[in-house]
Length: 212
Ligand SMILES: Nc1ncnc2c1ncn2[C@@H]1O[C@H](COP(=O)(O)OS(=O)(=O)O)[C@@H](OP(=O)(O)O)[C@H]1O
Ligand SMILES: Nc1ncnc2c1ncn2[C@@H]1O[C@H](COP(=O)(O)OP(=O)(O)O)[C@@H](O)[C@H]1O
Image 1 (tube, protein in one colour):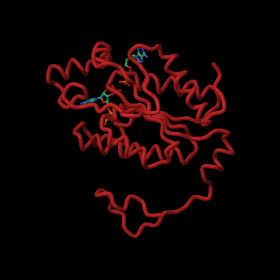
Image 2 (tube, helix red, strand yellow):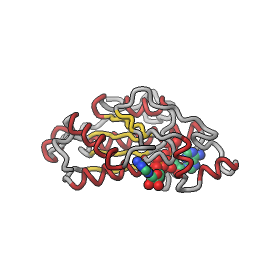
Image 3 (cartoon, helix red, strand yellow):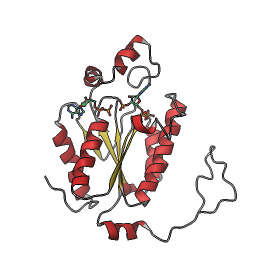
């Protein structure tokens, strides 16, 4: 199978896809649960990291194999060469999509917490995997709420002009049109948000049950 042969970034020639002898079904049998990508998106301060980490704790406690990829952390390593221009964000999300796909193949429920402001970039990440494997979770909190939280003081800096291209202030956020979940993280308690996510995982038979 050819991979990314049409990507302008692709320099791969004479490369042949190597099929692993252990597939997702085998990992599912061993682990007792399916893998999935839980793609949290929303403004800075909307609660992506908090919710992804709380869901992670709930799943881990029940023995499910999980991993969180968080924007702030990934930008210290894998994506430390990238800034916040539209093109850099596109490349950031492209890499995260590819890494998430590897986690999916490894049988892990991967939770990604990135602003991922552009619809086309999120849709490209979705298109890398099967429709049932990608769960887009829109952490929907008003800009005013996010700005009031401003845990890192970034909104204040963006308003002052000390940070350029800041999402919601000087760079756009394109709301998801039909996410699997839209969660009112501006008003709901974190535990309520966690229940919404874990209930969907049970409903979709990714996990069999979750303890409350
Ligand atoms: N210009 C600008 N715009 C948005 N966010 C900024 C910016 N500069 C720094 N930060 C901090 O970086 C975090 C967002 O990184 P992401 O990798 O999630 O961004 S993106 O998906 O590539 O748009 C984001 O983290 P969260 O607050 O957790 O969302 C910010 O803390
Ligand atoms: N559902 C929620 N209700 C109240 N406060 C929240 C909620 N989710 C997150 N927070 C708080 O909002 C702030 C920003 O959350 P964070 O998870 O860092 O957002 P993001 O990752 O989207 O930037 C933190 O102080 C966090 O404790």
